[in-house]
Image (cartoon, rainbow, N blue to C red; front, top):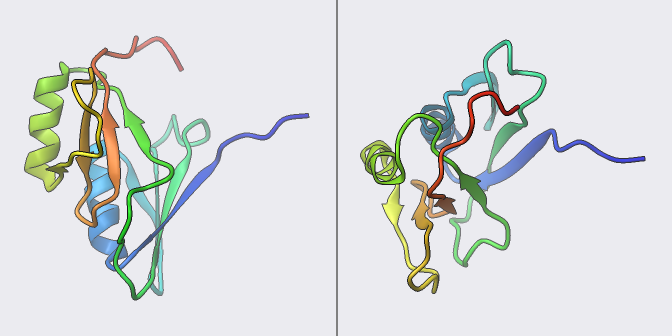
Amino acid sequence: MTSRFTDLAVDCTDPDRLARFWCAVLGYEIREDDDGVVTIGAPAPHAAAAPTLTFAHVPEPKTLKNRLHVDLTPTDADQAHEVRRLLDLGARPVDVGQGDASWVVLADPEGNEFCVLGGRLDPSTP
């Protein structure tokens, strides 16, 4: 027996803003927006295969390094181009002690770290 990864829950102070940021990053759309909780997901026909992200309002801001983070792999651009695009969307570079790594560490508008990897995904890979 196994489980399938279906949703990532993110506590944040501004669910609407963070949902819009991650929609732009991932090409997702808002699925539900209800009283401080916003859920986003992939558009059809990929909706069932891709996990959703749910942003829930909490009063306190993020204060420490994430213990879990998202890794992104550009699908139609090289790493440098994708990093520039994400910075234009509101991400910012961060140093979490990664040193001279092949990935780039950024943070979303609320400071949640994520990595942009170097290789492109094969578009035929699910």
